[in-house]
Length: 418
Image (cartoon, rainbow, N blue to C red; front, side, top):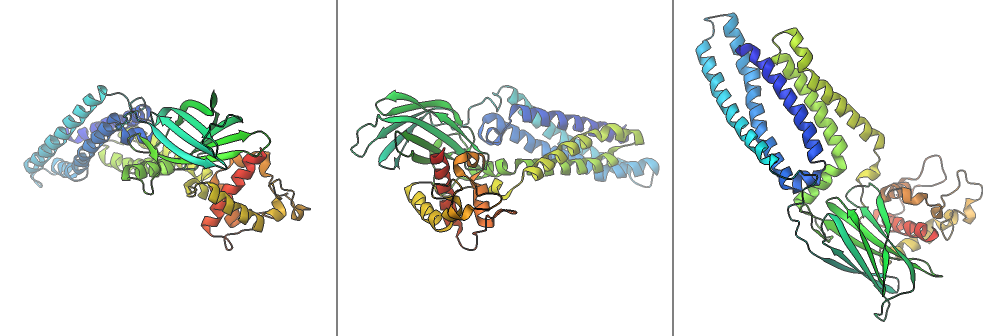
C-alpha cells in the first residue's frame, strides 16, 4: 500500500494544483489584487504553507520511497522498521502543514474575492494638484483618490485667477507609465464657471500614471496640463514621488513581465512534474494520468512564452521619465527645429523640403497614427532609426533625455494637428 501511495498522492496533488491554479486566476485576476487585498495575502500565506508540505512530500518521494522499495525487494538487507518510522514522522509533518493549508482555505471562503475586494489601504480621500497650461492654470481634484471608480473635477482659470468659460471642450487622457499598454481618453462634462467633471474607472492599476487635460480653445492651439500620480499597493492615489515603494516596484515588475514569468514558471513546473511523475509511478500506465498536469502546464507555458516573444519590443519595458510640461515642450521644439523639420515639416505633416522623393514618405504626425504607438516606440525609432526608410538614427547625436523631450513635442504636434 505504501508503495502505491506515491502514485495516488501525486495524482491528488496534480488535481489540486490544476484546480487551485484555475481558481486563483479566476478569483484574484491581477497582481495588485494578489498583493493588495486581504484575499490575495491569505492566498499567498496558503501557498507559503503548502510549499513546505510539498517539500516534505518530495523528500518522501526522492529518498524514503527508494529505501522502502529496496526493503520490499530485499527483506533483511535494509531495516524496514527504521525506514517506516522516518516515513511516519515525515507524514505527520506533512499532515500538520496540510491542516494549516485547510485553515487558510476556510478563511478564504469568508473573504471577498480579490477581483471584487477593496485594496487594503482603501480609505477615501481627495487628491488636489495644479498645473499650468500655456497662460491658463488647471486645478485637478480626484475623489476618492483610490484605484477604481473616481470622480475627476477640473477647474480652469486665467492669468487673473478668474474662471475661463470660453473653452470649446476638455479631454482627459490616462496613460499607465508602469508598462507600455496604451492609454484611454474621455471627454469631460462642462459644469459651468470653468469647471469640468469626469467619472469613471480610469486609474485601474497600481503604479505610476500620467493624467493630462487637453483644453480646446477657439481659434488657438490646444493647451495641455499634465499631471503625474502614483497608485500605491494599498490603492491610494497620490502625487508621483521620486522613488516608489517596494510593493509598488514588485507589482510594476510583475505587470511588465507577467507573460514571461508565468510562461517560465509553467514550463519549469511541467519539467519538474514530469520528473516527479516518473518517480511516483509504480506501473507504466500510472504515467498516463500523472503526466496530465505536466501536459497542461507545458501547453499553457509555451503559449505564454510565444505570446511574449511575438509582442516583445524594447518599448514594452520603457517609461517616459519626463513630464511633458512647458519646459520639456520648449526643449523638444528646439530639438525638432534643429533635427526634424527638414523632412517632417514645421507642423509635423511630413511636408518638409527634404521630404521630396523619399519612399516611404516621412510620417505625418497629424494623421492620427502616432496615438496608436507607445512613447517607447517613438523613443527607439528616434534613437535607432527605422529600417528600410530614410529615418536616420539620432542615438549618437542626442542624449536619452533629449530624445524624450523630442517625443513629448511630437506628441504635442500630433494632438495639435488632430
